[in-house]
Image (cartoon, rainbow, N blue to C red; front, side):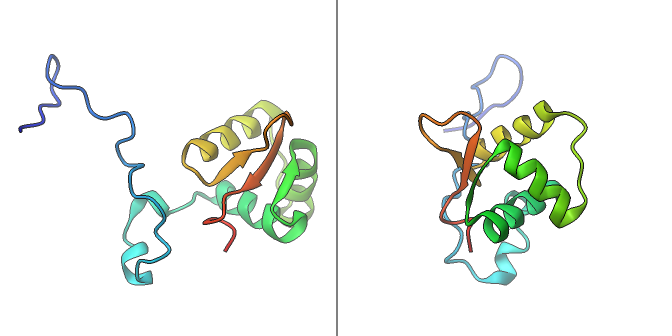
Length: 112
C-alpha cells in the first residue's frame, strides 16, 4: 500500500512521529539520534524543575516561580507557558492532573 502525502492523496496519520512509545529500553546512542526525544531548552527546564523542586507535580504558579528560582527564567506571558505545557502533554512528557485545572505532573518515562 503506497502512502501518497500530496494534495488529494491519503492523509498522514495524526499521531505521526508520536508512535514511538517509551524509549527507555533503547541504547543511549540510538536515543541521542532520535529527534522526537530531544527537548528544547524550556522543556528541559520544566522537566528538571518539576522533578527536582516539586517531586514531579506542580501547578502553573509554582512552576513559574520554580523556573525563575532554578533557571532565572521569566515567562513573557502565563498563556505561553500554559501552551508549552499543553504541547508537552501532547508529546506525553507531562500530564494534567484530572479535576485540577493548571496542575501538571511528569509522565513516568520523563521522571528519570
